[in-house]
Image 1: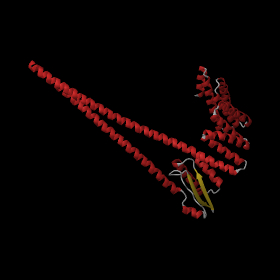
Image 2: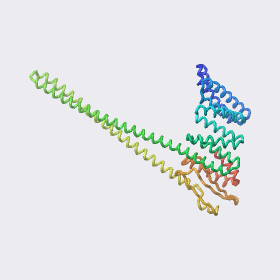
Image 3: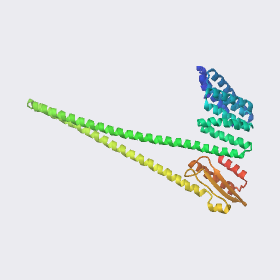
Image 4: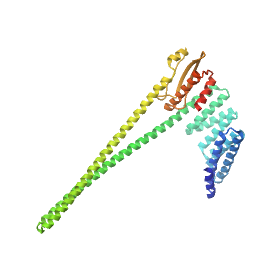
Length: 404
């Protein structure tokens, strides 16, 4: 598809679209290269990605696309990093930093800086990486780039760990986890806001429809009143004419009676239409009430289901009596953020060895609870049934089982 897009852009000589198609092709080749285990195939895909990026870079220079140029410097730097040509990768990251800073592209500047920090750690320049990370961190905090801040804490944790400063490393572990939870909370809050907006929109729509029904009913009633008034006026006129023309003859009297009969039929039809509209309005009201009851019932079912999930999860956790039989001195702090938890603890005894696991699963609430139930079941299978007692082997099998 990207090749087709490139051909169409070349046919129209649209350099912006040509450069975009080349970037997308390069990204595809780069992604494929990272999935290859064969070195020759991996190298071939990386070189194709590099060629596409360089062609796109020339086009972006021609049209003076500063944002695109800065982004391509980062992409090319990533290619050289994967080729383990760290010095060339650093050159391209610095190029992106320089052009982004000059153009005032703050977010692109931070992205390039973070790529450079990651490269320095990978190539073993830990002190330099720490210095660069702290410089980037000031800008990230100032602009409230929470995701980039979380990434930098991760890199600083790794750098301090590598130079043997475990206290500093743990400090950044705490900051990393704190910002990670903040990102999750923001995402969750956005979802709740979207649901609230959707609910309010639907509620407003129902109010509009109900109001429209009321307006329609009022219009019908007004039409009915006008019809009655007009009919009465017409009837009065007819009677006046009849009174004036009574002496004109019996034939004229018959015609007048026929006209009155037709008007009465029209009036009856109008009344029947009004009754039908009234019944429809009442039917719509019943439907609205049913929808309201359905929503409230669904909410109760969800709440009851989550509470039941909590009972299931509590039953699967190792009981205090089992813990007391396995460990003489311990304390237990278990404070789930949601009704159900993504954290769990587990203990068992095998061949005179006491095995204890404390786990933090990805996510909160029901998704995290599913993962904790899966983790508990797999630990029971590996330790109790397969009789594995070495921590490294347990973790390895647990990892493989989860992937499977």
